[in-house]
Image (tube, rainbow, N blue to C red):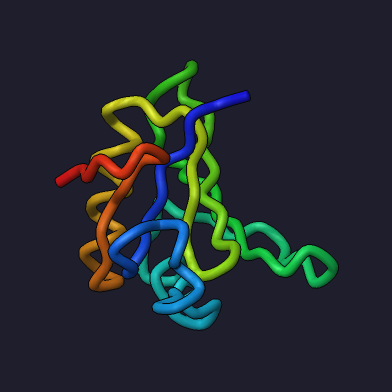
Amino acid sequence: MGYDVHITRADSWTESHERPIADAEWTTVIASDPELRPSEYNERNRFVAAFWTGYPGSGGGSDCFVLDDGKITETNPDETVLRKMVEIARKLDARVQGDDGEEYT
C-alpha cells in the first residue's frame, strides 16, 4: 500500500468529481509536454495515464500519472515527481494535494 498524491481542482481531492479534470484537458497537457508519453486509454476502467519519460529517478526509468475520477494520481512520489506534479497542476489550473490533505506548491 502506498501514499497517493493528487492533482485536483477541488478543495479536497476526495471531491475531485465535483470539479473534474477532463480527459481532453489531460490529453492536451500530455501532447504539449515532450517528456510525457501517453499510455493507451483504458475504456473498461475509464482512466487516462501518461508516463514521464524524463523522470531521472530509478536509473532513468519513467514514472506514471493516472487521471481517474477527475483527478491525476501518483503513488509514493519523490521530490522530483512532486515538482513535476506542481508543473502539471499549473497548466490545469489545479493544485497538488496528498492523501492527508497537505498541499504541495
